[in-house]
Amino acid sequence: MGVNDRPLMRVLAGEALWPPPVWIMRQAGRYLPEYLATRAEAGSFTRLCYTPELAAEVTLQPIRRFGFDGSILFSDILIVPDALGAEFRLDAGEGPRLRPTVDREGLDRLASSLPLERVAPVMQAVRLIRAQLPAETTLLGFCGAPWTVAAYMVAGRGTPDQGPALAAARTDPGFFAALIERLVESSITYLVAQLEAGAQAVQIFESHAGSLPEDLLETLSLRPIGRIMAGVLERRPGSRIIVFPRGQGRRLADYAALGAAAIGIDQDTDLPTALASLPAGVASQGNLDPNLLLEGGAALDRGVDRVLEAVRGRPHIFNLGHGISKDTPVENVARLLARIRSAA
Image (cartoon, rainbow, N blue to C red; front, side, top):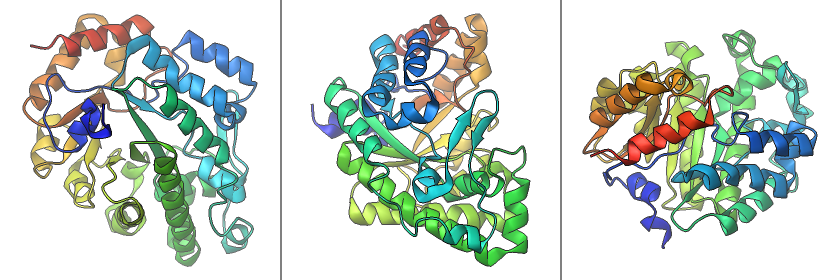
């Protein structure tokens, strides 16, 4: 089977398939008992990300169990700042931590460009995954959008409203622009390396798009993502790129206009309205509420049917509106897939 014959790749090329192909964000994660066993074997989250054999194993686990149409590399959006020197770690019960980068002096201590040797284990994981995936399954790579990653870097951790990063963007715009620039160039290098290692499409996670006020959206989100996409497409013409601008449902058409093959839609966005805003030929992805997958039963069935009804006849990738909850029963995921694949 050729790359472009895979169901997910056909949708990314603008073809409407029925039933739609499916994968779910964080599908390789803590809701799976086999993931928990491998995570314990690794000893730490970062060791799991940087050990190719283990990262490949957890990426493949949900494919073996459920047969998703898409398999997304197991890694983290903070691998890029870590490779630059920001010292990423994930503390149990406390979430991700980085050494804060709060001014130009701190930025100057980081690498000026992405050191490919630092991310070589990630590329080896991509090669291992690609070699073991079923022929019909698409391998997705990814990165975080510059604004989302910068928000973590400035605060050194996740924050409810990205307040530290917003303050830095307004009080020291020169520093913040330089940080965004560093992340744009590093992200291009990172995504191109994933595609060259065997990823067949990539997703850009703009998880914190919703925290941006209107006057900063263009300079901190839309323009940097557009530059990443242009850079990737210049070096890898024809690449398929998915953009997930969480919290910016009213601006999906602007993200699509950057050249995205597909736009991810979060669960708080009205799906029919979002679909109507997308240009012809741009695929949609999402937007089932992860809480419905957690609940299961009839509520899950109704949620799945609602999405299917809205997307019939257009190119769509079935997914959640955000990542799967760690408390989701595995039988609910099986029910989700059965409901989608039996759609008449």
